Image (cartoon, each protein chain N blue to C red):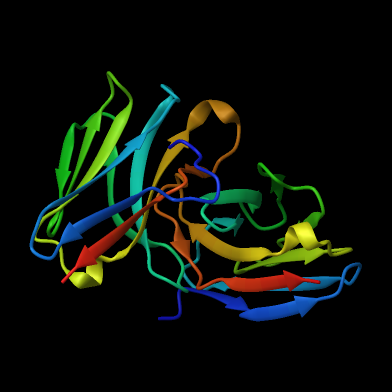
Length: 112
Length: 114
């Protein structure tokens, strides 16, 4: 039972480069989320999706885009990476009612 | 929870003692609360949740208490073990923000001394 799987686990980018983080869940969950976590801080919501084909902005959406073409996948894109986007990124999913979230193991991203 | 920037509040306890981790929330529209445990290098893991129509809920070695009058949530861990060392986050479901996502506090680090 894989749960929520994130790829890659680590990535180093140069300023201005682009990349896509992939999140996959096998629990048939409707809701999916991307959070970022910075040292000593909690999780801040970047974007989320309430179902296939839908996306919505969270607290800190600037500089990121997302897509939910398939129910099981949620992609997070950085169009032009900046050092301020150095962070640990977590994907999560939940069923109806957006209650108990299941998290992936995270992606450590460094932007130089 | 209150943001504390780069420095997480830390609770240090002796192995075998009980631990109490506190969380303040500000949104009276929140109706559901949840505690997560995050070990170093891992994603947050669910511990226990509680709805706003309850004051207390117990799990295995953990108890969550909710005081809606003062908007306070606490997590009690009985007979704390070294494996309990982690960062603990509270999160709430806020219906009035328009965002269908949990809002997380900044976390508390629990250190268990052997």
